[in-house]
Length: 319
Ligand code: SF4
Image (cartoon, rainbow, N blue to C red; front, top):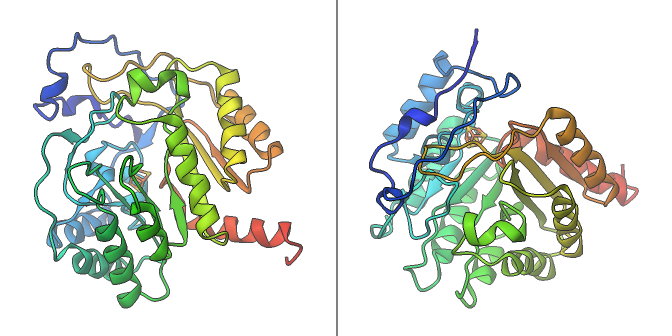
């Protein structure tokens, strides 16, 4: 049976900074935003491993609609450095506040969980840690190295914050050699002040470009949500900006509103429009594009990594 996962009922005191905001109107979800309800045996096993190792997952924190599918395949995206973020983006369901100290055992715990889940490809993300002098870069590097030490065959994808005003942080992370470096632009530049106020669009573009300059072999990836009031031409311009930064992989998914206090869904983009974005993005030269209503940066990340490698080989004429 297919049911709609209700991420909207998670409205609690997670977002004190948003409490005074007026309620926004919540549009009814269209038929094409339908997901499997969580509950399989493997799903429960995944949850058990996550709990046993005291891990935080973005799957749960963000109220991701794909959790039933992903956890039933043991695909969980770990969120490191705690569950409290120093930013307050208008779309995000992660709690905002002053984070707790870093857990020195986290790198080992994450590596053990990757081993127990038997992951061939793992995605690691984090909250923003503007409170730390390096933005958490060294901790990211420690997690990558711990995973490698215990799981040498597992490929590693990281989805990082922007390390804004953290001189030297990016270099520390790139030196740890993740296989895929993902940093999401989230939305078009005209939306930044309302959707992603703590970030700077051109800084994020430059961050991705710098990864490629530091390590031309590293795959780079970025993603956006649509349905936040962006114009089609703005999305096409953003694609060009990412191509200038030599980004390999673009993901585009529908924004879903976690609570009434979050940014409103301005529009549900149709599956046909997603396909059209994918076609245009491919012609602009991305190695890989995933564009659909339920696309999320970490959704099918393992399969997509294999496709990325194959696409690069084919482009280099090595297929
Ligand atoms: S799409 Fe990503 S965040 Fe969502 S459940 Fe799957 S792995 Fe977790």
